[in-house]
Length: 162
Image (cartoon, rainbow, N blue to C red):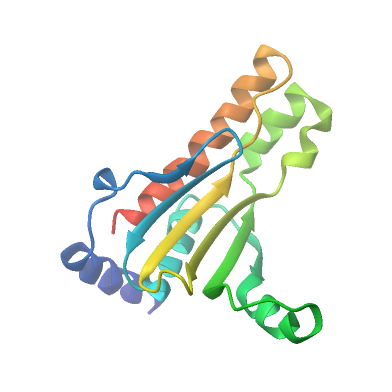
């Protein structure tokens, strides 16, 4: 039944959402890449999850960042920032192994994190972004880290393409 729900969701989005080719990074530097698109948070949250699990990758954890900030606002102060905001954590067994075999201390770059969020300042604009692994170490290590970066970008673009 879940597969049928995904199929219906994909069909609905195919007729209502822009293609990923039309989406450019909102922020793009050596530390992060963030894409922004107008739409519905729940829809893009679901397409992000689908883009990850359709690759056979298990999501290890979901961090509910916006609710945490809202819950703690009275204690630490500050204005509301996000209407919605989550970070999905996961690893690719093959790419993580390649990365760590190239440089044993690259374990610190796992898990990968992709965030999806909608801000109070821009309701209706959904942002999906990720931390870019730094390309450091040997040539082999840099290639392994670049492959992780490429996977994360591919996942985000796929999530936006529905």
